[in-house]
Image (cartoon, rainbow, N blue to C red; front, side, top):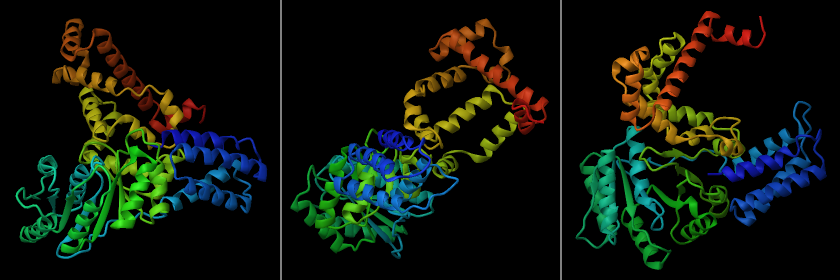
Length: 444
C-alpha cells in the first residue's frame, strides 16, 4: 500500500535537494510531480488538484528557515497538508451507548465486511469489551457460516436466525439476546450486494430504524481504487455512515481511496485492515499514515504492534541474554517466532524511518528464507540448539534432511550464529555497546 506513491513523491521532493531556497519556479516544478504522483495513485482528481493548490499556497508564503533545505521545507508542508487531508486527528469509534453500544457494518459483497466484523470483535475483546456478533445477511447462508466460524476463533457469541426473513427483526432479537448475556457491544454484519441498489438501502434503513445505531461503518475495498470513493459517496448520500474502514491495505492498492474518502464524503477513515488474520486491524492515525506515505516510517505503530504481538518479558530476557553473550540457537528460535507474530517482514520494514519504497524493491526480503531458517532450527534437538558445538557432520545431514534443506544451508546458519557470538564477545571485551561503537568510529 502506498509503495508507488511513496516512491514518486520521494523522487519529486528530492529534486529540490540541490536548491538552497524555495522559488516560484522550483515549487511549481515539484508540485507538478506531486500532482502526477497523486493522480497515478488513484486519488480523486478534484482532491489532488485542491491538495496541490493548498501546498503551493502555503509554500509561496512560507517563512524561510535557515536550518532547513528547500526539499525539507516542502516535505514538512506536504506532510502537514497530508495529515489534514487524511482527517487531521484520529477518530475513535462511538461506543458510548449504554447498556449496549451498537455498530452496523455495511459494504458491498466481497469488500471483506464479514471478516472485518470478527476483527473488530477481536479488537474490542482485547480492550476489555464484551461484543456479540449478529448475522443479518438473510440472503447468503455462507456468510452466516463464515461469521460463526470466525466468531469461534475470536471467542465471542453470535446471534443468527436462518428461518426469519426480516433482517431488522433478526437484529432486534440479537440486541435483546446481547443484553440478556451481559454483552456491551453489538456488531451487526449486514447483507452485501454486487452493486448498490434500492433494496439494500431500504434494508439498512429498516435495521437502523429498528435498533438505533451508535456507529455506522462502511467497509470499502482499498484494492478497487477510485471506485471505492464512488461507492462511499453513494452510501453517504443514500443511507449515511459515520466512518469508513479500508480493507486489503496490505495489498497492491495505490492508496487513492485513503486520501480521498474524507474530502469527498465528509466521513473519516476510522480503521484499516492490514492482513488476513483477525488481529490485523489498526486504528487509522492520519499523522502516522502521512509519515508512511512520505517514507518517514511509523515507529509508534511499530511499537504498538510489537507490544500487541510479543511477550515483552520474554523479549527483554532474550535481549539480556544477547548482551551477556549467552544467546543460543534456542533463543534465536524464540526470537524468530516473536517477530513472525508482528506480520510480514516487508510490512514491518515499511514502518521503519528511512526505508523507502525503492529500498524495499531492491532489498532481498525473502519470507521463504525465514521459513527455511525456522525449519532448520526445528529439526535440531533441544541439546543441539543450546549447544551448537555438538552439531557434527552426521547431525548436520540429519538436520538438513529433517528440514527439507541441504547441508550448506545448515552450515550457513551455524556460521551466521558463530559470527554473531564473536561480535558480542568483542563488544563485551570493549566494555559494552557504547564503548565498542566509539572505538569502531575512532573515538576515545
